[in-house]
Figure 1: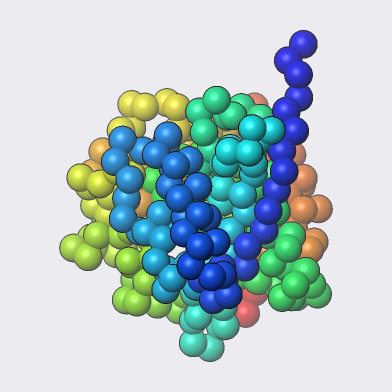
Figure 2: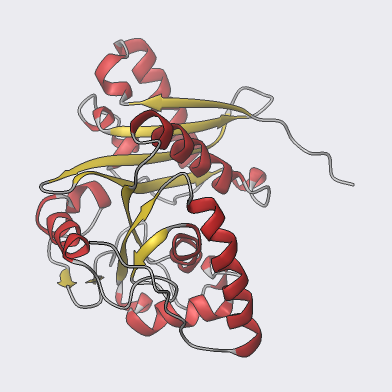
Length: 272
C-alpha cells in the first residue's frame, strides 16, 4: 500500500504588497522552480513573472513536501470589475510530476477558496472566472462551482453580470490570463479563438492526458471550442460557503450523464 504523503501548506494574500525583497524573491524562486517541471518553456506571466506589481494582486497557496521543496502551487488573481466588485480568477496551478495523482491540485485550490471566502465574504457569493483549453480544468469548474457559464450544469444563458465580467476580461485583463491580443472573443459562447496558439499552453485534441474523467464533459467543451485551433473557454460563475453541498448534487447528475450519454442537463439556477 502506497504511503500517504504529508504536506505543509502556506497561504499568501497579496504578497507583493507587504513582503520585503528577500522574502519575495525566495517565494518567486521556489514557484519558478516548481513551474519549470510543468512547462517546456516558462511563460512570462502571472506569479512566474515574479515582479512586485505582478505579485500584488495574487492569492496563492503552496504545498511544501517533507524535503522542504514546493510540491505544487495555486496562484489566483483578483480582478476588479466595475458594478460587480472583485472577481477571483482561478489562474495557474502547477504540481510536480512526482506528486500528481494525490489530489494536490484540488487541495491547493480549496486552500485558496476557503481562506478567501471566509476572510472576504463568509456569508455572500464571490464571482470567479477560469480560462482554459484543458478539458479536465473546464470540467472541474463546471462541477465545483455555481452558476457557471458555459457549462452543462450551469445557466441556460449568461446574465448581464456574466457578460460584464467576460467583456471586462476581454478588454482589460488578457495579459493576466496569457490570452493573445489577436485572439477573437466569441461573446456568445465565451470562447477566445486562437488564444493559446504557439504558446506553452497550446494543447492537442489527441492528447488524452488533459481530458476529464467524465467523458460527457469533454464532449460538451469540445463542441464549443477547437483545441487544435488554440481556442480557450472562458468560464464565469460564483462560489460561496454553500457551494460544496451543491457540488455533490451536480456530481450525482454528472454520473447520470456518464451512464446515459445525455449531452446536456441545465439547472434552474439563475442570478441577477
